[in-house]
Image 1 (cartoon, rainbow, N blue to C red):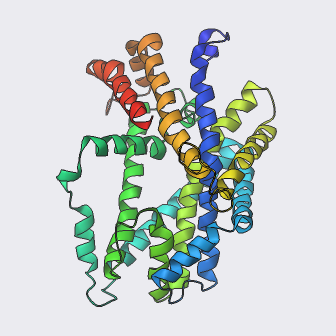
Image 2: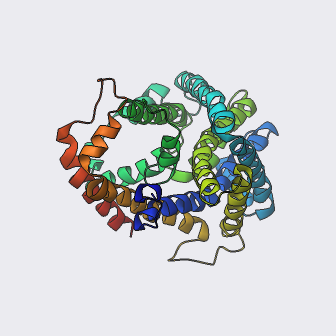
Image 3: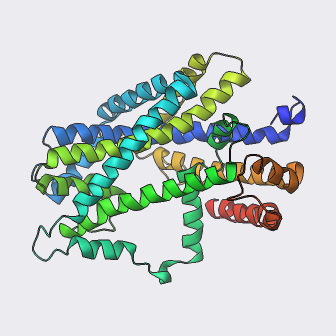
Length: 378
C-alpha cells in the first residue's frame, strides 16, 4: 500500500498492518487446535479409543485440554513444522508442501466418504448411512434467516481468507497473465467441495452409531472417538482421520503464516528465516495464554470470553471484516472500478471476466455488506 502511494506513509497501509496482525492473532490459537489433532493421532494409535463410552470420551477430552504441558508440547511440534516449511520459501516450502498434502487430503477424504457410506447400523435403533446422507443434503429453508446468512458470510472470511493478508501475499506471486477470475472460482469451488465431502465422511457414520449430529465443536473429540473405538480397525481409521484434519489445518496455517512472514521480511528488510521465526515467537507468546485459558486461567475473561475464545472473536469477527472493508473502500474510492476491472481481466481467457455490470456490486453492495458483518461482529 505504501508503494501504491509513492512509497509515502498512507492510511491505506492499515490494510497490510491489520491483515498481518489478524494472521498472527488467528494463528496464536489456531495452531493450538492443530496440536489437539496431533495429540489425538497419538491417542488413536495407542488404543485409547478402544470401546470408549461417551462419558469416557468427554472425560478424556476434558483431561487433555486441562493439561497445559501436554498441549504445549504438541503445539510446539506444529510450530516447528510450520516454521521449517515456510522458511524454505513459497516455491520450495509452501507450494511444495501443498502439492503433496492437498492431493493426499483429497484422496483420504474420498476414502473416508466411501467408508462412511458403506457403514451399516451399529446399534439398536440406529439409522442407515443412506438416511444420514439424506439428512445431510436435504435443505431446511426455514433455517435460512438473515442471521444465518450473515453467519455464513462470516465463515467465508475464515475459510477462504477474505479480509486477511494471505490473498495479497499470494497474489503478489502470481504471473502477470494469471486468470484471476477463473482462479477465484477454482479456490471457492475446491473449498466448498472439500467441505461437502467432509460432511459425507462424518454424518452418515454418526447416524449409523446413533450419535447426535448436532453436538457442535465437541463432535470430533467426543463423538468420533466413540465411533472409532467401536469400529473394526478403529485405531488405524481414527489415526488417519485426525491426521487428515491436522493436514487440513496445516495447509491453511501455511497461508496465514506466509502473509506476515513475507510481508515483514520485505518491510523491515530482514531475511525470510529471521522474519518467520520472529513472527512464530510472537504467535507462541500470544498462544500460551490461550492454552492456559482452557485450564488454570479459565476464570480470566475478556468481554465475558476466555482468552482462547477472545482471540477467535477478535481475529474473525472484528479484524477480518475491518480489513475487508478497507480493501473494498480502497477499491471503490481510490483504485476505482474501471482500474480494478482492467487489472482482473489481464489474463482472463473469456470464460469469466469482470464485466461493467459488476460495478454496483463492487462499489456499493460489497462495502455495505461488510459494514453489516462488522456491525454484527461488534
